[in-house]
Amino acid sequence: MRAGSFAREGACICVADLYLDKAEDAASDIAAGGGRAIGVQLDVQRSNGWANAVAETEQAFGPVSILCNNAGADFRVSFDEQTEEMWNLVLGTILTGSFLGTKP
Image 1 (tube, rainbow, N blue to C red):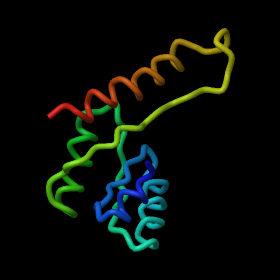
Image 2 (image 1 turned 30 degrees about the vertical axis):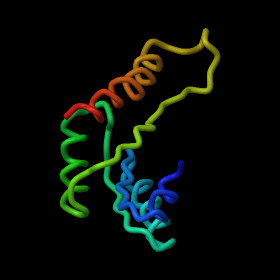
Image 3 (image 1 turned 30 degrees about the horizontal axis):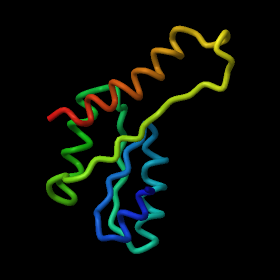
């Protein structure tokens, strides 16, 4: 389900992305459709980033009640070409990001 679908149902949306401009663009699109949204910068692999994103969201909208944890990373290379650093980024984004996002 896309964030805009949640917004159409009345949810306030915090769009978080590693790149603030992308998060703000997505939030602007939601707002243009009549929803309430903010964009924040977030590196999902960093617990302090999660704390900041949650604080900004709660300041704007109140307590967080839904998390859609869908961060991901991908390198379009063959398995043989994938480096250990690439592998660690993929795992860190998906696994560590999900862990930190759901950790109280």
